[in-house]
Image 1: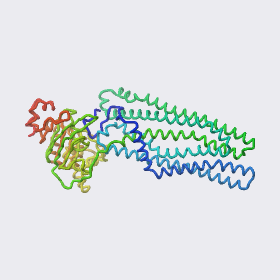
Image 2: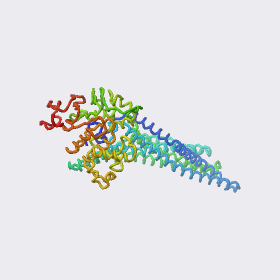
Image 3: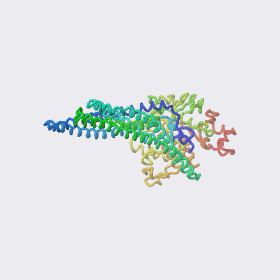
Image 4: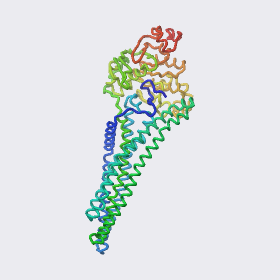
Length: 603
């Protein structure tokens, strides 16, 4: 489970539980921007939610007055009492229908906002350079794009309804004063206590929810890391130790979860106890006013109903809790949206070219440390260049920079005189192909996986022919034809060894490459015979004119036109394998003392 040397095809997960250091204020600002953008994405539906919620709140405010008026008229046997009763029934029906419409629209807004956040987060991950994406382990990414995005997606509708949810309590309190000042004063006595409770809840729950979600990310990251290295764990016999390591944060998760619900439950209990006391106070004062003749029966009924609406301020706690949870989750999801996009230009190649690749003063920096410095290379079109060096010398970083999988922090890379950073993404990927040590296959079938990406072919027959030619060049056709349905075998039904998987990755790169093909240790799992077949294909059977091959094999370096020897991020020497072989330090790179891979190996 050791991360690759550099920006390989599989994302490198950091140590379990670790995340990139972030500035909380910047994270909160990014979350706010993401939520506002998500709200704009569903602006019409969010406005409809707010409108229906507002109309329902107005109906709820009108209903006690209408009910009280209808009761007074009916008690006096006034003929208009029936009409008022019908109006009251219509308002109640409208309130029910509006509440149902609000719930239905809220579900739609939540789904759209969640989908928007997930698409943008995933798009940001795919558009950034691999080393930026590797800040987050696969488990963390999964948690941020699933549970946290879903929680964040509820914020736009929850915020819209939280604002309108305040209207019935505030309006009810105002109406209570209009019905009778003394009943309003009786209720108002408890409002400061309620406000303090809600304020304390908002502050405490925000911190608690944030800690809970961070522990969730730690658990997800450790689990994904262990699943990726399941074979290593089994071979080492450390399943019990790994299970204990993965589950170690569970007690903390439990503590934070209990703390979170204690905060919510305590606030709900206190507001739940306060509200009945306020209602009883209003009912008692209203009864005294009724006995004194200052308030009618309908007025008392309206006062009690308005007191119930005003007491609904406690229900705002639930809406407030949803917003707090959603904003905390949005900070996790928005971190993905803030990943820097790999910049691309707008130029297209006007004509074909020989595939001359030049690196001029290329410099790369990782974590504040220069890991590749002052690299100047010229790879003539039609040649094969091998890059060798000890582990950590920067070989994969050089390959990533040469194919612009990562931007240069200094210097430039040019293909046939055109800087790669000035090309469109489409032009770049049509002309530069990549194969990796651990390829990831995409597509429904084996043939579809080889045809994935790369240069477009004119028609289905041409695609099939190109796929078959690439598979043959990669030495993969014998095992592909043995599969149950050959090229049409679903990937899920095609169990493959590491070498077979690597051969399909090579075939995909062979089919898609235009002028340049970059192989980042892409033959490491091949047997010697297959590796030689692939090297012969590179020499004449692959349409890519220029090949840059990161390798640990002396035989591969021996067959290259040029060898680049990297040491601690700098070029120590360049030349032919035969010329460099005279240096004992060079021979030591391959653990060699004999001459099997020496000057005569190329023939």
